Image (cartoon, rainbow, N blue to C red; front, side, top):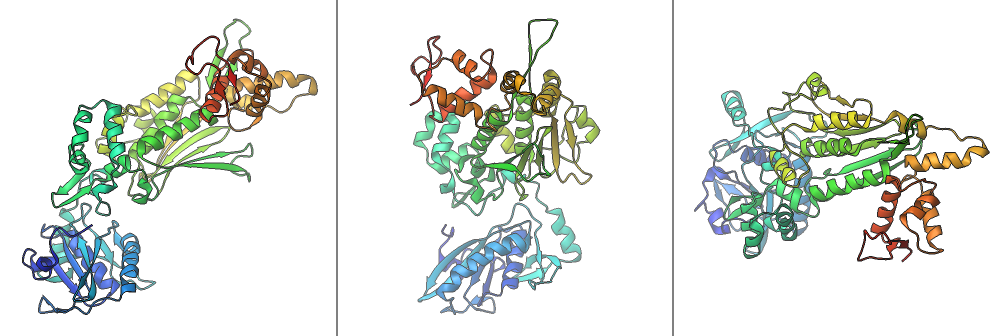
Length: 514
């Protein structure tokens, strides 16, 4: 990204006050970090400043021609700045680095905008064992360590802009996918969808509130990159959902499987929820001796799972380098996110479903998820989890966070009937048929094992089958949810096809191998 002004204007201070310029002949990392920290703190609200590497300073003026930097230094310095931005400045900060050539010499200009998460502090020394941190500010043309009244005043400037609503100075408007922006507008039925083809990406982004900054220096907002960039993990390294499920031995055993979901927020949510629904949520049939109707329950009710996962994605801290984690065992499903809920939330209120947060960590993410019907944004998620578990006949969910509100955990216990079926030991040979029926109806093989899938594909090799015939082959007395999920999964993956593709709901519909 080019600078918003010409290099001559920058070097000679025609449009930039000297308080916003610092020249450095070499690449002293500690001095550069202190200058970046000072400009990011923007103590005088001047809009940050510029650190010019490769030019010596004399009485506040640049010495030209420049001393310059070796070509191999440019790449090394920029890589070093990325590491220092994460590990030597808190909250982490990265300036924009722009190389230039003057009189045949290379220089590097660091564009340091006033940060939206000030105050920033940095390491006083970059020595291996150094542990001292301090705040730095600019006074005149000098970078100084903030102390006393200056430090107190700097603290009062602390930003209150939520992370998702801040400009991302490591990205450009070109990092927003126009296709994703248009797809979103069509999905939510926005009137802007009709006007969008005639707008530039920047203009469209500003209309949607995902582009900010000055006309000469526009930046995408974090929420824009989370929603409308195909690879948001490039900007938010742990923006992902990790699904981990364990074998019968549990976490103490040696067998477990893992699947990671990444991508724009809507895609990541849809894919992870669909995966959980197809592979890890099963149905159990409870037969009653006193009536013909059976009761069908899920090991983990999908509505509760959906609310727990959406809640974790909505309220997690995207400046925290921890993913959302979903751990699945026979006995429970756990959804874990960082950090914990707002300080105004009390655990005893949460357990009753009556907690109402006074502040939302990601207000813009909430707006988009609400438009996409993922959430209502009215503190109703916990109540829905409680209601879904109760309606399914499951034990009450458990919520957990520590005194520091550093994490939030939702524990969904498995339904007792589903757990009982899952824990059944093999019966004598004579009971093999009833055991197969019990396992099939419970749906325990609906994605964790390949038995039903292999049996179905083998049967279809002999000719097309209807849903009812498929159910019989799998040991079901009727077409169950497990059967429907298996057929849907194999159809979506192209392993089987419909005999009447234009009439998916026809009573004559059958399935066959491609």
